[in-house]
Image (tube, rainbow, N blue to C red):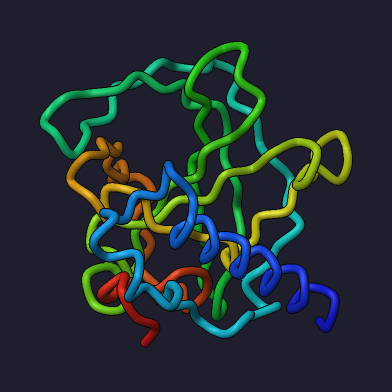
Length: 183
């Protein structure tokens, strides 16, 4: 747990620096001076899974609506199956294009709109960091983040498909409150 906690806390500190200082931060310049960091749940090792990615035989292209009324096309690549508090869940895994290597795992849960961003959160899975064998991947909800459109209307973000709405509270990863302060 100590190694996981340290890794996650390092990633969070890097993201906070990005939000405060980077030219591509989603925060308006006027809000960066007061920004002290994003709000996060404590690291929860129980919400980090090593799972088989069940690849779909037929990889369908689907359109997902976005925050500006448009739609984006994704490939429905596969799914993760896991258990939280004795209840089984499935999350669909997407790619933005055939040549793309990073997987996108969007989800909404019972914290959405209360403690986390109302439209849901995302997890990105990169083969170099998250793939641990031919079929197994790390799905770590501690790495769940709010899309940039949570912080600025300048960004367009895909919504969470209903098939990835979880009937459980995922108390890991980024919380959502005013981006100027931690809560």
